[in-house]
Length: 173
Image (cartoon, rainbow, N blue to C red; front, side, top):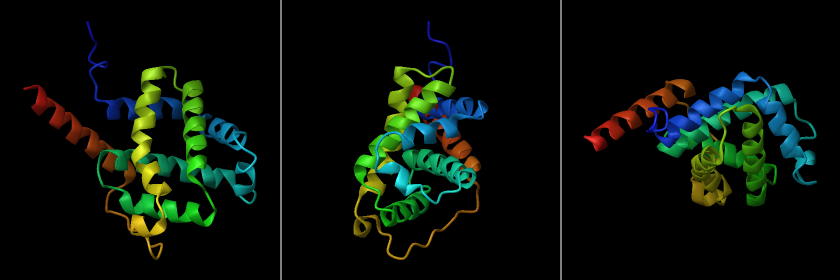
């Protein structure tokens, strides 16, 4: 018999995985060690990077990517991130390496990580990666202005999870 946790929607499982991995305090350091080793093209992109700040940006970006995977919320933030990455000459193949490193780091730091959960993570990240991989003219970004809503990323994620749970409850009845 399936436990209630097995019946959770994929988005909720991915968010729970994110929080479990963060509890180790090392998932982001592991991610960057793995990512920097994926290709000789990657380290030069981070040559002048202050990693404590970069880790904070990664944390925020992951949450924005998760929000965007569920709705259009956070689109402006993803477009801004895409513009920044284009200015650094980030190519679509680099996003594939990024996602591989992310999943490898999560596997090391989320004690409940599984092949199924990895597929959920990959699916959740694809919408944002696709948007960031598009040429600038297609994303709608022309001047690099980022607009923020009145709610924090964490509050938006909670709202999306509640909305999804309500939608799923309506579907099952």
